[in-house]
Image (tube, rainbow, N blue to C red):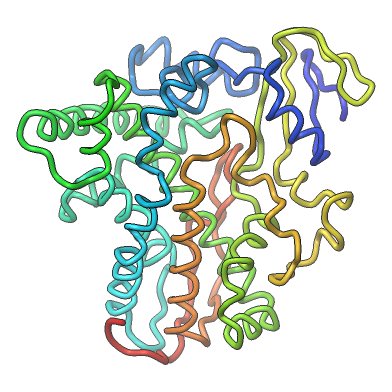
Amino acid sequence: MSAVVGNGWVTADAQIVRDVLRDGRFRTLKPHDRSPFRVVQRMLAKTNPGVLNATEPPSLLVADPPEHARLRRLVSRAFTPRAIDGLRHRIQEIAGALLDDLDDNTHCDLVANYASQIPIEVIAEMLGIPRDEIPRLYAFADPGTKLLSNTAVSWKDFQTATAALREFEDYIAAHIERLRYGGADDSILSAVLQDSDLTDIEVRMFAGLLLGAGFITTAHAFGNAVVALVGHPDQLSRLQAHPEGWPNAVEEVLRYDSVIQIGVRVATETLQIDGHTVRKGSAVFLLIGGANRDPAVFERPDEFDTARANARDHISFGTGIHVCLGAPLARMELHIGLQTLFERFPQLAVSGEPTLNNSTLLHGIKYLPVNLGPALVVGNH
């Protein structure tokens, strides 16, 4: 662990990262805290006060106990094992239908045509949003996520993102109104509305968080996975010969090429960590990507090994009270999406230079040119 300028600390030690995330003497980072993210938050506060903001309460990302426990309990029914398993067949249908639209030997952007489409369609299903309105969700999610995951953005991007956040808030408020008073459907959002005492702003924040945290992160993980697998043909061949290895391969992808790069916690009292005095109010920057390659935890940490025995020991979904609620869903989407893709197009090849996203917090690919190669399976399955 090392000190950084401005009364802060940084660490990539996996055990320290876990300990800090689980320690009740730390709280989440707030917009008023001194951090590299404060500039964007100040711009938001001055120009768009009241806009839906996942870095402010009542967002689950930053809520602290006891409020966090109340919010998490009320929305957790959306992520019960039964609820997630109920989406399995639908995810398979979505993946198959998307691949049915792609011809043999097609050159395409896999992010736009597949990787981003699976999570956005699943989220639409969970929110009860009609399929023909999915492009609107996509238009909301991308600029909003870019804004809230960066330490600095251009004025043009800032304006685009805040407009998207306001438009999404208006859209989802009207949608919630329809579900609440115009007849419930069988969506998970409808169930949350019926069975909880969440306020309207809390429901809007839940929907926004589901879109923001559940869409781009899964799409990025998918792109990272494809590049890793195609770049290690021996690993891909092993999975094609032994498909029961796919769940562990997903864990290794999440470890090897982490989407979430940084977590931040603030000390609520002066305490000792690994022989260092961390003073009250100090921020500790947790390098998740580095912790996932800690040689004290993972042998050969820089090697990609889909059969790694302890691949699941990564911290990509966090730990402690803020562990990602949607982790089981993301795992399922990645497992089904990747296995279905490589069963259909086993000779898929990256055909150009992937473009990385421009984000401080999130590491992923926003453009992935591929040649699908010949299809092995044709039609729905």
